Image 1 (cartoon, rainbow, N blue to C red):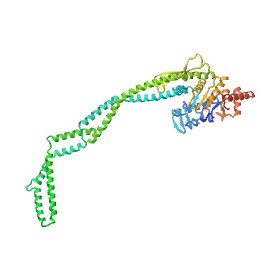
Image 2: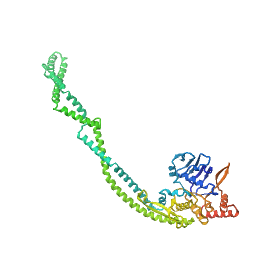
Image 3: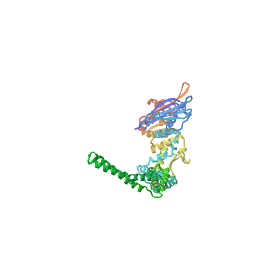
Length: 546
């Protein structure tokens, strides 16, 4: 069952259109009217919404800008617009938000397919022929394509990683050598955390050793070696107090405190003796300490403010060196992976080429069959699988459609040959054979240069196509228009001394009159009867109501 995707198309100050709104129907929509009335303007407007090139020539004379706007349903876009200015750049919007023309083309180009005078543009994208051919692959073929594309993505990822490694190999080698030098310099110093603080304290002491020795020796002499010494005086005082305490008990506590003081003096004396014995440094100790501190200071200027910072830097440098060495080792692993992945890509690609070759034969046969029905019996379409220099993201070949409209004419790239009508019919045949993921299809000039039974075939095939998507067709042939679900009459009228285009949706009785006019050039009883017969025949043949 057909659904409506393009709800309406609105034009303002576009060519000879002052203001126009067309509300479309599901299924098959036909645009009819006299030549030059402006039917193709609607196609041009839709083409602009798909990102095709536009310029100020589309702006109505006397206006500053032209506006094209479409309303959509069920495709993730509610509205899209394109404004062309006489001066300045054009402007595109999707759902009210400004977008680039490229973004407009990317999003709306997947919704609306325009086939006509510019039908070739639908095939200028390098991937379009391949996408159409791949729609004919069976489930096994589609699974093979997915496997190939996934393998190719992994292949490209590994190739990128390897290239990045190789690109900076010299710089990384220089960095590794520099880090090794730094680590060796730090390690050779055999640093101990806090060593620099202790060294500075020791150097100060050694530089003042004579004064320290004199002071400590003098203090020791006063405590233990004087005549009398402090220790002896304290001992004598203690003895006197202990004697007095026998007669005055309260003096016993003072005598005890004096004993403690004497013991403390003796302890200090012993520590001074030990200090003096230990302080007398080894010969040259000051020089060695200063040299050691100079070594630490040199490292500190390069790697950190103190020994702790130097050791922290050493840890970071060691970690970086390890990572660089692991990277160097991974290059070999990546090369092995790349070789294996390339072999897999080529194997899968060769299988895919075989399936595409088979699908191409079926596509050619079916398309040429439809072209025969469309009054192009001598036309030929060839699917060319052009090998690539290296594997691509979707296979080992580029797919191209070569076409010849007439017997004896050489085949050439479809995007470069053929008239608008021929191309439109070829696109119709391709859509019927390969299907299309675009829910809206627009055909202009599809019936150019044909009539009679061929015109009926075009109408029937368009009706068939419209059962699953919305179709908009510009036609001059009643045999085609009769198959439409909705018919719109386009006319050019004069209003206020200006020529404008108007579009009117025809009611059933109006359709009969328009088809009668199209059949004979005037509305007569005979032409009306023929029009009714044509509509009845089309309705019965297509299985769709008029």
